[in-house]
Length: 372
Picture 1 (cartoon, rainbow, N blue to C red):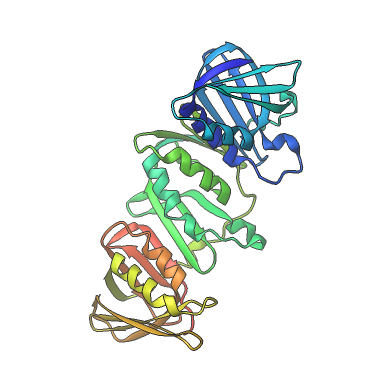
Picture 2 (cartoon, rainbow, N blue to C red; picture 1 turned 45 degrees about the horizontal axis):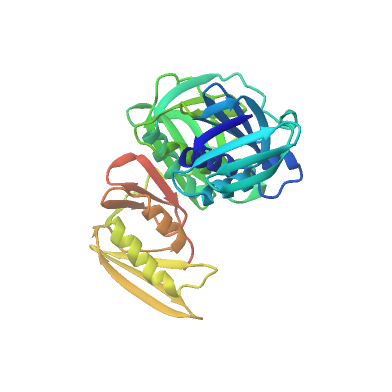
């Protein structure tokens, strides 16, 4: 095998592959990337047995062939090479080494046979649809902060992608929750997604997917089955197992009867919460919101470290209310707002609070209060 590639193209392909590879591996071959050169392109494939990424790039192929080499080492080498360099990778089957050459730099890397490399079993997908990268990015980016990190509730360790009835008909929906906060994001249902099974996309896959969704103009082909999900562009495909579990009925958590309405500048609110939370105790990080006619007072009282208070002008015309929240949760939810104003809907100091952007119901957040 022998081929040459421009350093930037090679780095992009290798970096996508190496990020899937687990750093601590008991199976040596899983630390490697499978490189397959044929025709006028080279394929880079990496897997951790749950996710597989396949990246295709144009190259000048002199000799077709395939081998596997340490993904992290190859990525580090290519990253440190000068911009614009032409990189040549070659392997003599008898030597069991991969040579990487660029200008005066020369590296010789140990390889493992390509036959040992595990390839994910192909799956029959029950639904395939195409969606703009921008739409998918919004769905996953706005919901992923609420993914649970609690391993015992493994079915919450991902984003629930499914179809549901929303404002104005059926929607493609992402939901994530950890029991303390919840995010529910809707987008128009793409053609072909009507019969899609609901799947829980794991946290790691959501992180890897972000790299595929950088280009707003890109169309992403999404294929879904009961056990796998595949996201593909013309050059990259990401295949992942989905979490085998049942996502809880989140609709029961979303409050319907909250009538006390607070409207506040989202950026100002986030900054004020951040400032007063500076003195809160690390463990609880509790912030108290005291609401009165067009006035909001944010306060923190931490006996160990001190107290803080800040007043904001807001739109609020209901009866007085005092309610406490974890500052981190409030900040994360406020930072999701793309518009100027955030609207909070309260019921009482012990009930879940709903937050949305203006009157837009396509992104809804729920946060549980805490005692202060």
